[in-house]
Length: 33
Image 1: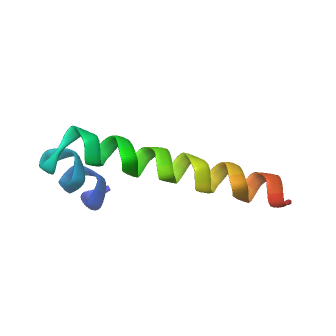
Image 2: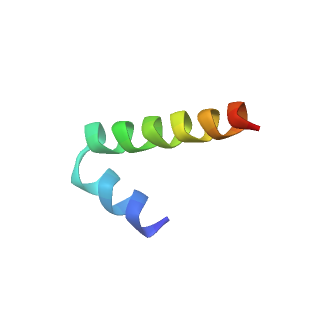
Image 3: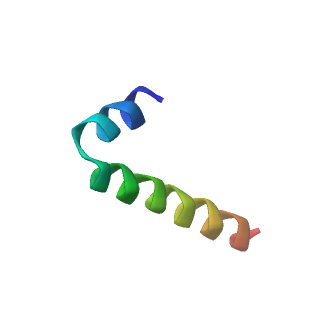
């Protein structure tokens, strides 16, 4: 959570990219099973 908060503080765009990458990774992980 600390990393997310830090990225969010640095810039909203960075936060958006981070959450999007996280979602894509989780989706790919689910599809692999």
